[in-house]
Length: 141
Image 1 (tube, rainbow, N blue to C red):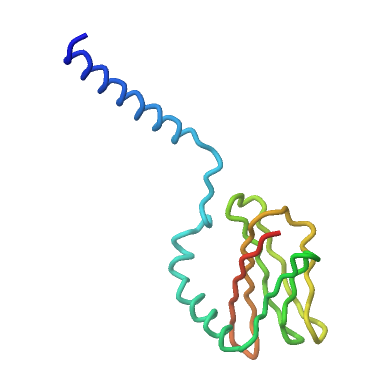
Image 2: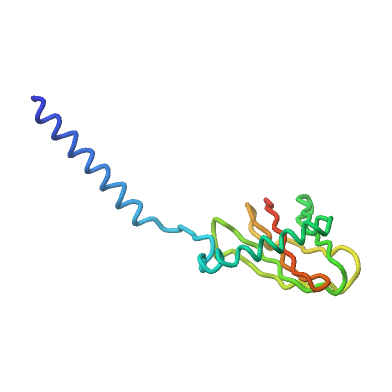
């Protein structure tokens, strides 16, 4: 075999490798976007920054997670209404939203036994004294 055939075989092999990688990447399933409405969420991001800042100014950690009991505790005042979202980055079909209504004084417990083990983002939005707040916590169940 001479140099010409070796170069041609190398180029053909490289092209076949690249085409194989393209076909494999196009056929992949299970690629999840962060959200369905990514661009609308990006525009609203400044509101989330403002709500996160107002939550930090409260001076307390609102979301706490106990890994041993698999319970999420929310430190919210009585009468608070909000929304608790569980976001699973690896599988959007497992995402859940729970409405939160605090009817008793003290911490509110949310059991997480129904959630699949793994990495979760917990996002809490609520209104306290007429001010909207947002806090996010990353947990592993």
